[in-house]
Amino acid sequence: QLQLVESGGGLVQAGGSLRLSCAASGNFFSINAMGWYRQAPGKQRELVASIISDGSTNYADSVKGRFTISRDNAKNTVYLQMNSLKPEDTAVYYCNAYIRRDGLNSHYWGQGTQVTVSS
Image 1 (cartoon, helix red, strand yellow):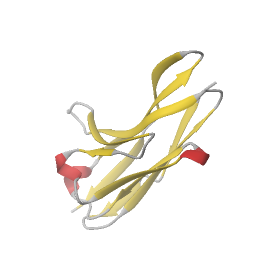
Image 2 (cartoon, helix red, strand yellow; image 1 turned 45 degrees about the vertical axis):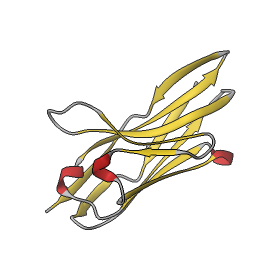
Image 3 (tube, one colour; image 1 turned 135 degrees about the horizontal axis):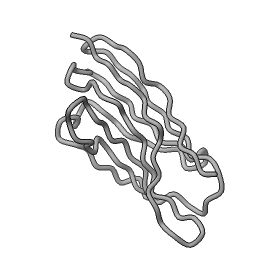
Image 4 (cartoon, rainbow, N blue to C red; image 1 turned 90 degrees about the vertical axis):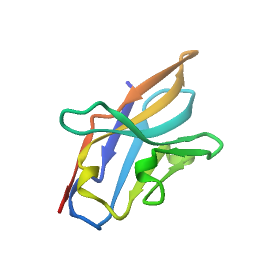
């Protein structure tokens, strides 16, 4: 059973910081890419940030300069450091991993963690 377990969400005031973590566990060959998506009420899920195996990163324009994605390959864990949070960052944040398992590459999702930024 492959699982992505997220932690670190919560309630914070505007201007504050939070750090999200997502750890992959189970039986798999490799993790090609990991990322964070978010979905606010009434909106589509959107990519926040992603990081591939060589460390290259990609960010949504709305979070550039405020959020930092990183990964610990030894721990199969991805992090999202969120600084200068704004009320519009309020959403459920989902971890995503593109994993090679049993000869196939597939996307896997975490259960989501709520981030609420108060004004």
